[in-house]
Image (spheres, rainbow, N blue to C red):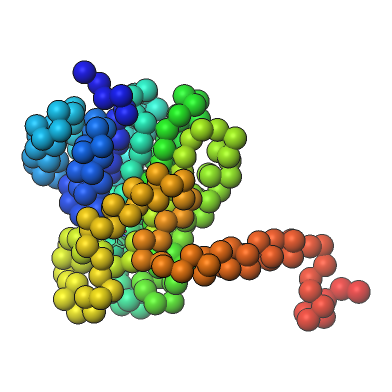
Length: 265
Ligand SMILES: NC(=O)c1ccc[n+]([C@@H]2O[C@H](COP(=O)([O-])OP(=O)(O)OC[C@H]3O[C@@H](n4cnc5c(N)ncnc54)[C@H](OP(=O)(O)O)[C@@H]3O)[C@@H](O)[C@H]2O)c1
């Protein structure tokens, strides 16, 4: 029997944060549609979670750097009315600094972290707004707010996800559709192993356990947070950041250049 919660479509569900969302959502009673490239890992997880929680778990193999595969996932989001939650999580991390990186790898990062994430978030937003229900969790990163400390293309890809989420939430404000961006700091997953790195060089006090990260993300979603920074204790810092951002608002687009440029009258 279909779940009363509906189906959660989780991208990047074969490992790390995505697999952990799948586990936690199955425990909450969601049916699952698990998306990634590694069909074997997806099928094993789907079978395990269906068995453990009595839910329906299906898989959809897709390489999200390939336009045709992204389109298949979009079609599922648009055409399957049981889908009530998108966890827009698949992504790849950086290998080295921009000054030494192969630009083709950065293109691949943009294809997955930006192009695919954008298409899936927008398709879900349109479908959910039409159906009058649904939620979107976009997995950004804390480096969206601190690009100087990390690889620039990766940080920019996550700043894209952050801005997209804020703007979508504004467009969806009069609908019941919920949108959230989660901004993890370092979280112990396979992300660095996949690019020849490791978490071993990082102070363990700065690396969150993936279970804690996803539990905090889901609590943030339950609490209606638009931005969830699981590491941030003092939320006044985030409020001050937004206050400064909003204060800039009326000064961002004027006919005259500012006097310090000495242009015009
Ligand atoms: N771990 C961190 O410290 C951290 C911090 C901030 C944000 N994040 C973000 O969290 C998200 C999940 O990363 P993770 O840390 O859980 O890393 P992970 O363990 O490496 O998982 C990445 C997932 O993305 C999938 N994926 C990668 N390339 C793909 C492609 N071309 N097509 C489809 N799926 C693809 C992988 O599956 P397949 O290989 O089976 O395709 C895997 O399921 C990413 O967006 C990442 O940027 C992570």
